[in-house]
Image 1 (spheres, one colour):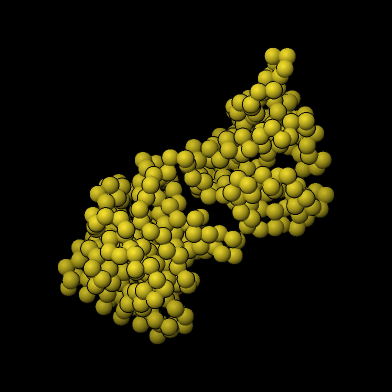
Image 2: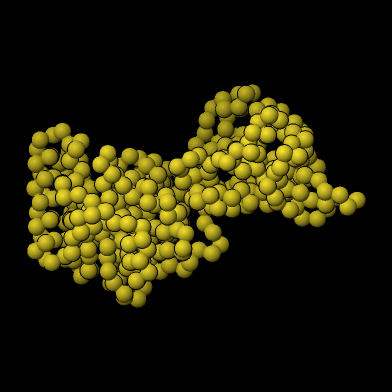
Length: 375
C-alpha cells in the first residue's frame, strides 16, 4: 500500500469511520450520529487517512478529529484511530501532524489531548511528537481507566530566525524584570541575563517591596528602570488611573503602592520619556517590531500560565500571522522547558484579546526602541 493521503472527511466516510471506531475502541465510542454531526460542525475538523489498495482501490485507514473552542487559543485532539492491520505504517504520525496543521490553520497555539493510561503505543507516539504530560484524571473512561493529559505548543516549520535571547524568571513575581533583561541582552549585553540583575531590576521597578508578599511591576516603573540602564523606552497605557489597586484591601499596602506609582510617573516624565495615554493597537505593535524594536506587553496570565494575574511577556517578532513572544514563565511542574516558552507564535487575534487585564480591560506596553545588532 502507498503512503496515506490525508483529506477532510465527508458524510460518505461514516461507514468506514464507524467500522474503525468499533474495531479500535471497546468503550467510549463516537456514534454514527456524532460522526455525522461533527463532520458538519464549523468548530470541528475530521481528517481521514486514505491509501490505495493493492487492487487499485482506496481505503480509509484512520482518522483524527480536532475540536476548536470559540474564542480560545487552543484546540483539542478529540480522537485519533488507525484501523487494525495498518499499525506501524506511519498513519498515526501522519494524522497527528495533519491535526497539528489544522489547529495552526485555525490560529490555535496549543493542541491538547487525553489518552488511556494503558495505551502504550499512543502515549509513545505523542511523546515522540513532542507532547508533554500535563495531568492525570482517574476514572475518566467508562471502564474506569484513567486518562493522561498531554499538550503541545505548536510551531510552524517556517518560524523565522529571531535573535532576542530568552531568560526564564527565577521567581513567581519577576516577569517584568525578566522581560527587561531580555531587552537589555538584545540591545546592550548578554551579561544582563543573570539572576542578580533580575532581582536588582525588580527591586528598582516593583510597585511594592516586601509588604504582605513581593509585588509586581507596572509600566512606568519598568520604563524608568529601562532608561536608567541605557535603553530608550516609551510608555503606552490605556488609563491615567493608578494600576492594580482595585483589589488591594489593606490600607497600608494600598498607600505604599500608590506612592510608588506616583513616584514612577513623576520620574518618567522628568526624564522626558514619551507617555501615551491610549491603548496600543496591533497595527502599532507590528509596525514597531518591523522597525527593529521590542515591546514588553501586559497580558492576562490565564492563557499564558493558567493564572488570573497580570503578567509581562516580551514581543519581539512578526511573521505576518503571529506575534512571537518570549514568556519568561516556565512551568517546571509539568516538565516544561525554556524551549516551550521562547518564541511562542501567538496569532494576532489571540494576542489582541489577551493583551488586556482586569474588568477595565487595561492595556499597557513598554516599547523599547533600538536598532542595535542582536547579541
